[in-house]
Every structure is written in C-alpha cells, then in structure tokens.
Image 1 (cartoon, rainbow, N blue to C red):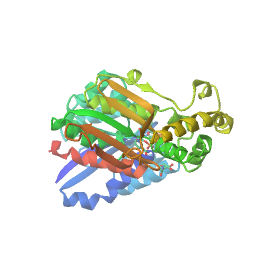
Image 2 (image 1 turned 30 degrees about the vertical axis):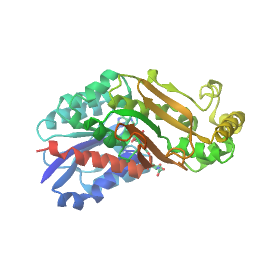
Image 3 (image 1 turned 90 degrees about the vertical axis):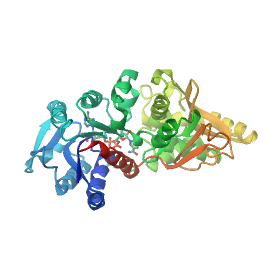
Image 4 (image 1 turned 180 degrees about the vertical axis):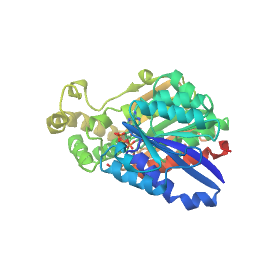
Length: 376
Ligand SMILES: NC(=O)c1ccc[n+]([C@@H]2O[C@H](COP(=O)([O-])OP(=O)(O)OC[C@H]3O[C@@H](n4cnc5c(N)ncnc54)[C@H](OP(=O)(O)O)[C@@H]3O)[C@@H](O)[C@H]2O)c1
Ligand SMILES: *[C@@H]1O[C@H](CO)[C@@H](O)[C@H](O)[C@H]1NC(C)=O
C-alpha cells in the first residue's frame, strides 16, 4: 500500500469537492494500492492538522463535517471541538504548514495542494519545493507571478502538477506536455478558455445585444459576482501565460496584450456593478453588434480567445472561420486548438466544460494520483 500524505490549502468550492472526491474514491484507490492521507486543511484564517502526523490522516467523517462547516460560510476554527486534531490560526498557520513540510517532505513525502485563489501561498509552495514536497495547483496565481517564482516551482518538474489551472479538468496541460516531450514543435495555440466569454460570444453571434447576454449570464450564475472580472480578460490572460510559459516563453502578464470588453471609464474604480449592468453595458451594444455583422459578412464569427504563436501572446476578440472548432463553439465549453508539425492542417482539439467545482476538483485529484510514483 502506497500512502500519499497531503495538505489542502484552500477549501472553497473546489477544495471541498476535492475532499468529497477523496472520500468517495477510497475503495477505488485501495484496489489500486493507494491511500490519500489528508493531514491538514487550511482556509484563509486557520489550519487544522491531525495530531499523529506520521501515522494518521484526518478521518473521513471529519473531512465531510469540515465541508459542511465551509459550505455554511464559516471558518475552520469552528472545528476546534473535535478530538485528534489541532487548530492553528493566521498568521501562525503558514509557519505550521512549513513545519509539517520539513517534517514529512523528505521522510514520507507530502503533497501541497493549492486550491486557494490567493498569491499568499507562493512563498509556502516555493519553500515546500525545497523541502522535497510535491505541489499540485488549481490556483493560477503562483504560476503567473514572476518568471523567477515560476522557475523556482519547476525546480523538479516531475513534482509539480497544475492541470486544473487551464481548462479545469480538461487534459489541456497534459496534452501540451506530451506534445513537448515528443519533440513535436508547437506552432500555435488558440483557445477559448473562459466559459463565460464563450457563452457571451456565441449568444451575440445570434444577434442578441451584449447587455442582455451579460445580464442573462450573470443570472444563470455563469459570471463572477462582478461580470467585469470575466469581461476584462485577466483570467484568460493568466491561462494564456501558463500555456506560453510551459512552451518555454520567458514572459510575464505585462507582456500579454489584453483586450477588455469594457473601456477603462467603466472600470470597477469608476462605476459600481449596478451602474455597469444598468446603463454602462448598453453603451457597448452597438459596437459589438457592428463587429459581429462585419465578421458574418466575411463568413466568420467572433470569439474571445488567447493566441500563442511565436513571440506573440494575446488575449481578445478575433474573427475566426465559422467552420472551425472554435467557430462551431456554442455555449460555455472551453475549446483549445493546438497546431504542431504533426497536427498542422487539422489541429489537435480539446473541448469540454472548462469550469465547475466538480470537474476542477477531479482534475486536481488526478494530479495527486499522478505523482504517486514519487512516494515510498
Ligand atoms: N471553480 C472553478 O470552476 C475553477 C476552475 C478552474 C480553476 N479554479 C481555481 O481554483 C481555485 C479555487 O477556486 P474556488 O472556486 O474553490 O475558490 P473559492 O471558493 O473562493 O475558495 C478559495 C479558498 O481558498 C481559501 N484561501 C484564500 N486565501 C488563502 C490563503 N492565503 N491560505 C489558505 N487558504 C486561502 C479561502 O478561504 P476562506 O474560506 O477562509 O475564504 C477559500 O477556502 C482558484 O484559484 C480558481 O481560480 C476554479
Ligand atoms: C461551487 O461551490 C461553491 C461553494 O460550495 C458554491 O457556492 C458554488 O455555487 C459552486 N459552483 C458551482 C458552479 O456549482
């Protein structure tokens, strides 16, 4: 039996789904000779750790109880009345994670699983790497800060996995890495990597006004609470940056040209969400409608994509052939077209749901299972 000890950093939507997957996969994993041992779980304020670090994990009923508490919007410190675990509160918790990493990293092995949405984890992950830990991330921030941080995290490339940072559970990173390993040169990657913007662009293609589409997307729960967080393109840019960096480009977010679907004058520091949704958006309808019509007259459609080609790395609206994988895209799926020497006329295409707690957590779980060979 192989045991993989892990600490989960961040237990929101994705982190809690991961814990549930771990519990429900117990018998599957044991038939594979595998046991995932959750030794600690952290949120933004606290860390709960099992008492007997070397021999035990937090038990399954505790992990499920923990998810209940988090779903109720409460802090992990609520769990302090449970036996067999200890609770540490911020700022003590980061130091405690490192203490465990130094204790277990080289001895039993340890995976630091980052399901937070914070930059505050970068320091811990980098030090964890030095202490022999594996790192699995759904969080894009550690891979999109400085090139120096990125390279540090990749000191031992086999110990790092981050499938869910691009296209959630879709095998996007794995596919690109396999292509790189085979020596097949990647000429171009073009992808629609935001479910929200994929939905928005295919709806405006049908002639609906942008304002109406964005409001509908918000009420369907497809957008962030402030839809400008999606419309600004920053999340897509982070994914593009991760793809570009694994292709070997030494670039940072500042080098990526990002087209925002709203102008600066309608930014969050100038206009409230209500004003933006109420009247700001209406002012954008005409321009996008004209662009849709112009594209249609060329037999094309508009898609909000990232393009990585040679030194070029940009994010924004592009006119694409209607009859291409991206052109045929409807709704909120992600689509990635990868052009290489082997896939030159017809690209390799990866398509499917690119968001959601469940699929994202599944991608994280597969990443954890994937590093098992590094454990004694
Ligand atoms: N949801 C998706 O569909 C999806 C898809 C692909 C990738 N992702 C990525 O997956 C990550 C998690 O997403 P999510 O939707 O689960 O986010 P979320 O619900 O906002 O959860 C974030 C969690 O991280 C915790 N956290 C924040 N700062 C922390 C810190 N410094 N140390 C430890 N924990 C910290 C939060 O603590 P509190 O509970 O105390 O606030 C919360 O538990 C994000 O990076 C996101 O971009 C998500
Ligand atoms: C993800 O999980 C969070 C927290 O449990 C929940 O608020 C959110 O609605 C979930 N998202 C989806 C798309 O199910």
